[in-house]
Length: 223
Picture 1 (spheres, rainbow, N blue to C red):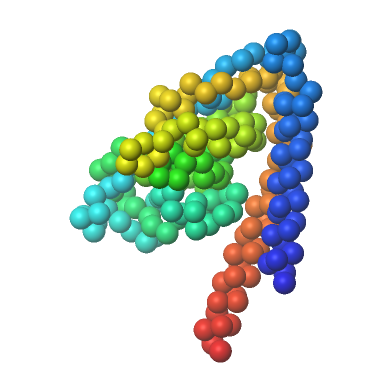
Picture 2 (cartoon, rainbow, N blue to C red):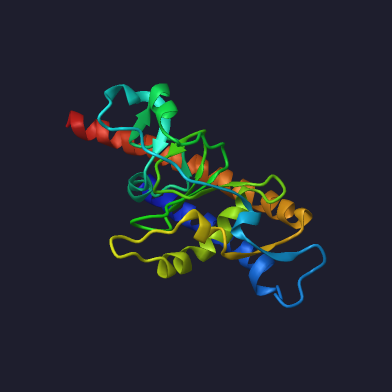
């Protein structure tokens, strides 16, 4: 019952953050007459778009249960939390050096770009991803919060417009061309100031739920 109550609270907090974004950057904004210091740009103006890679699965030494956190889109599909710290698998230093994946900083906006396009999360620790991601490392003057909600409001369109013969996928070159409003640094800082406490609360609740789920599993196993 505590988990269920927490999930409702998380949904309420996410809706509040989304409402703040729409009020500040959608409902009251005339794209033909932007405020001073604002402009129309692309997702590339929000930050660096980074892909990932997978070390060879035929090399056991490339994988380590206690190694560097490494995500695949399946991790976001199974774990619906807003903040991600680890996935089901981790890679060793050798594995990291063998592939072209990158260690992404805290605050990176994670975005799945193939098979199922548009799964999203925010990195709460340094981690790597496989090639099924086109994540955005936000510019300091833009911030994680604004980048996340811009991409969140574009994800359905991106998914619908990028279908393939074998499976759906959006390339980095395609993703970076999607238009985005680039507000002044003062406004994005104000938005981050308003949303960060909501996100911190969500992160705390998500961590509590994971502990509750682990406790429930332990009790059931003892039964």
